[in-house]
Image 1: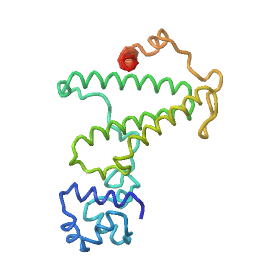
Image 2: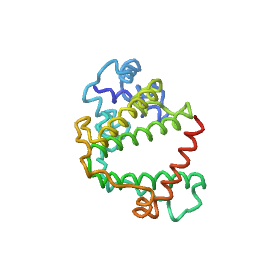
Image 3: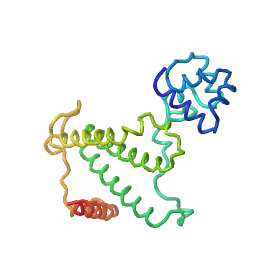
Image 4: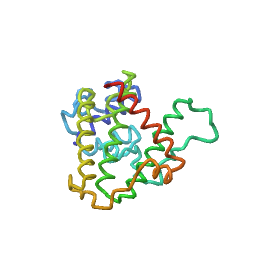
Length: 230
């Protein structure tokens, strides 16, 4: 059995507020056996995978970590929600949330416009992965604020995720830098002459008149924090 199965069945049980003893009773197995399954000490048979999938009303693919959708659906771009705030409830978000979200979203939009212009798969892949790790790290920070939240949602342990994800970010940043300098890296081709966009504050403002102010504010706020460290 893969490593996701023990984590996920533990997460599902805790989400329901069930004790291990109660879940084992309802599943028709001993508490000791369920404990071994949840700890990954023993592997269960296919029949039990199907049985526990029915018990928690999830797909077998979800139990095995093959999809993040509990019913086994495969996510497509069309399924992703619109990132813009809801117009029917403009007061739902606080001012600071709305401001910071717009700064980040608009700046990322500019960044991806630039990446699209380079048309370099490696740059897009490495930078996208870097941003994903950033979101992952901050999500875990918020999630861990309540010690009652089940850590089984994540497959990387709380003790090592911060250090390892920071190390991964350093690698991804280095890879992107190498590619930007025209050097092949991680199986990707570096930027060739003329592929990198010609940029300056003036050009950025002309290309992205509505988004550029957000980008500049993000730069300013970030560099103010950097300077305070020096």
